[in-house]
Image (tube, rainbow, N blue to C red):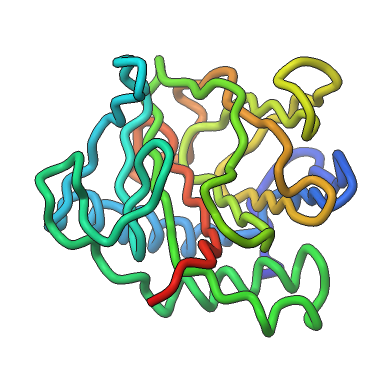
Length: 221
C-alpha cells in the first residue's frame, strides 16, 4: 500500500500524540473504490445503517452499521437490538488483514501479528454530520483502534485522555488516510468537527464521508 494519490505537495506522516499515527494516502485509489463498494453492501444488509439514538434521547448525525459486534451506547451485542434485532453481519477476513497491515504500517510488523479485530463500525457523514468529543471505551482490552477515511475530507480533532477540553490537535483527514491510536493515546477523546463537502475523488462515486473503525472488543465468542 505504497501508492499515493496525486497531490501537489505530498502530505507527511505524523504522530500527533504518543501512540497515535496519521499516515496520509495509505490506501490506493482502487482500494478505496473497493472499500466504498463493500460499505454499500454492508449498509444494505440484514442490519440496516441507522442513526444511533443516545441515552438522553438525542440522535447522532452520522449513520452507522456494524460488523462482528453491534455497537450501541454503551455496549456491544451480537444482535442489532436498536435496529430490528437481526444478528449482526460477521466480521470479514479482509478487514482482519487490512487491520493487521495498518498496525504494521503504524507500529511495525511485530505488533501486527497479534492484532485480531472483531468489530467494525462503518460511519457515514453527510455534509452536515459531525461527531462530538468522545472516548472509545466499550472494549475490554486496550488494543489499538484503526481508522480509515473514504470520500470527503473532514476536520478531525484528537485530544487527551483526561478531558474533552484542551489540549487537542486538529488534523484534516482525507480519503485514503489511515489513523491509528493505541498505547498512551488509546483512550484519548476525539471527534469530527466538520465534513468538507465536495472534496471526494469523483472516481469513488461517493458524496459524503465514510469512516471505517476496526476494534478489538475483548468479548468472548
